[in-house]
Length: 165
Image 1 (cartoon, rainbow, N blue to C red):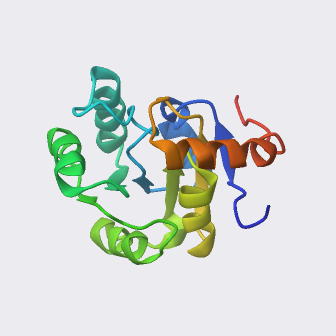
Image 2: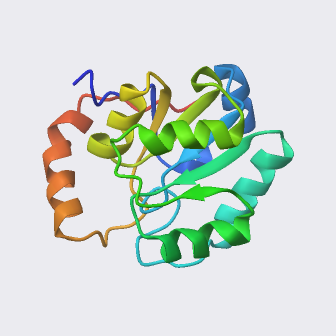
């Protein structure tokens, strides 16, 4: 469980707010894309994502998307938000997480990894000794492998309480 345990669990990415990040001493977010910020079959950011990114970046938070998805999907989503991105990251691999830290020009202690999956996102954060926030998936599409992993996560998720103020 330790390998997959997040620092915090929240119901939705919009619960990651400036006051919460300031309280945690966070200056940047490395975020997953699919089912974290938008359903897998949503190709452009909606108004809610745009508003959330704008509020955080105007508050001084740096954001980078690190996705296991392909380049076109990731680029088409990240470009309208004006945030850097990495694709085909192979999370829980650490390589692109550390590249994102370089891009953000922040240390791992100043950044939180935001994601919806224990076996990829939270595992990557823990492998990098970073803070992490687990959110509930915003989509239900996911391919067969994602659906399989979600079923495997159920007993672990039950042990992780929500942190909601």
